[in-house]
Length: 112
Image (cartoon, rainbow, N blue to C red; front, side):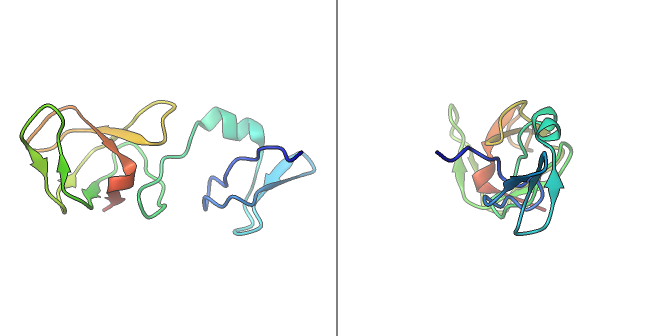
């Protein structure tokens, strides 16, 4: 039975393995401990795999209909000063010029 190892926090590689108490990524050579992995929470990545942090600027890569309104966020819309959702690597919170308090899926965003 194979144990579940987390993806590499640096490159997102899925081939990580345990070596002398550390996790190692053969794709980029990064080593980290599981305690560090658990403390930092999930790594939020954009559609291209780039890590996102609170305060970053992102660009919408596809026209998105906003639920509950008739507004459409057009492809190329720039969204500044994003906030990460705690314990959720799939969503970010943000404001746009047209609408406040957006929750967006990171699969439709790229880092600016």
